[in-house]
Amino acid sequence: MRSLKEDCLRLPLWIGGGDHGDVVRKTTSQGNQVILCPTSYCYFDYQQNDNTLKRLYTGDIVPDSLSEKQHSLIKGMQANIWTEMIPSKARLQYMVFPRALALSEKVWTNVNEQSWVSFFKRLQYQLKRLDILGVNYRKINYNISY
Image (cartoon, rainbow, N blue to C red):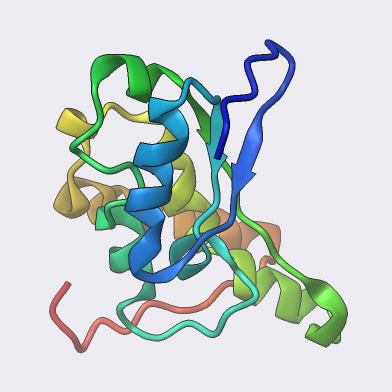
């Protein structure tokens, strides 16, 4: 991949699986700015299970082996949700929440300040807000260890 050194260009990286970190390292090492959206974490139309939220919050979306310069080339993260198989607003909300809350905190919080335990405690208050707003989010299974 050759470098595309235009200031206005951002490459969205939708790579999933085991190649994600390697693609981020190669792309940023060539001076390209990127927006991360790995399929294995950030495709909210993919089915959820009891581990999805923790996996998203604690996942290695930004590889820790990047230089400071490479890290500065990561301009953000995004979630995708393809709605052709989502039949209703209620199902759309179910697929997005509370994952959007976890991704938002992951993006806006310094990695050394991220704490799953702290997030999970604070999430309880956010879920109450979603209840008040009538959002049909995926309920948390409190019978498993997070």
